[in-house]
Length: 583
Image (cartoon, rainbow, N blue to C red):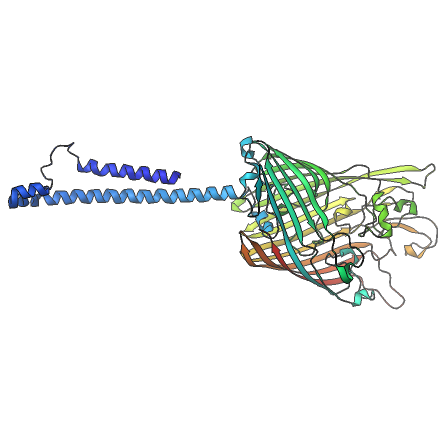
């Protein structure tokens, strides 16, 4: 509208210039003007002869008027081009949150677009538009002041592994069988699954000029498996993934509910929305070895000092963890740790609800989002504080022992050239094993009944490259490491503590420990994601492909009488899925 008004004003000004030049004698007769038809008829040929000498000046003035009109026309064209450029820039700013290019890569492969990242300016006015500043999804329905948006995707996957891991579509990285572990090590496995299909629902509303609220729920079908699940019925159960509410007021944001842990790497800011979280593009629902992640109940507060800087703190559900690879001095201690049971129907799973957690896990995190040289850069650092407590029955009377551990993480997500992003994540901890997908323990109990944290670390590096609008290439390498921690229980002959004859070992990774005591696990992954069809109103169809190679290295693998055992377990995995995403 502004452009049209400017053009009309300029045209009007141009129309006034022409008469002004033609009537330059202020209304007085012009001796050189051409005669009217009436005058020509009255004066006859003499008048024509009189007009002929005057034609040259008139043509000159007409040419000057034409030149003036042409000049104004060129000026109008220049103004139109400038207005078009300004509108294009404004459209880009209004349709995309600040520093959201990295999120768009993930959003292209996720059912829910980024909804929580905004430019947190220095004034409340920057927040006043709330969620309404975003382009509504085609399926959004507005009721009153709230906008309701369904989302999700249908996913049909085929997977193949060179050894029989036996974990379904989601890979159990910590139990890859050795090639001489029969029959699993000698058998391959193939399967189909639609369990990774996902449903989501989001509600946005502006409460006041500077306050907005977002509610989000997300589920898939990887929940508890009933009897006869894979034989006839295949009744995959709905599972809660995310369920939270987030309130924003000015530069502050508060969230309560089940969300991705604040320790999980972000693509943009400290947003809790799935499209702004980095959990790889893998089809495997357990993602990638080396990734730090959890989805758990929490309460977090985030402050945005500037448009590119965010600081957050989160109190999250704790769960002290020690898998079956940990040996305790007495069975009394094993009931005080989550044993990592993945099935709620397992006999040992009852102990998971009896864990005596002392206080919530405390996570602090800060994130910076810049655009150096026009390329998005996301840099973040996080810290973790955890405490562990056990009741010690080896003392008289029974005592309580408590330790505090923690960890730190530094992550990078950088667009080195257009549409090519490099990812680098790191984590090191004393007692943070459960955040490394539970591939190793948080802590052990020493022979005297006191706690000791297990040092652990992980890392992930890779790239994501949107080569064309229809093709995405990605590749990651990830590794996890758990340091051994054990003690000698007493002078009791036992074969479980090889190299320490006459003693029994307790803890993790001791000589002669089970081959489930993993020292290191590594995974390399490569994949291509072609988009077969896409429509802003009807969604998109993609093929998700993934190839991964896994290596599992335990602390101890004793040789057998028949010969030496392999030192590592290996497996190759191939995934291919057909996915339809809602718009």
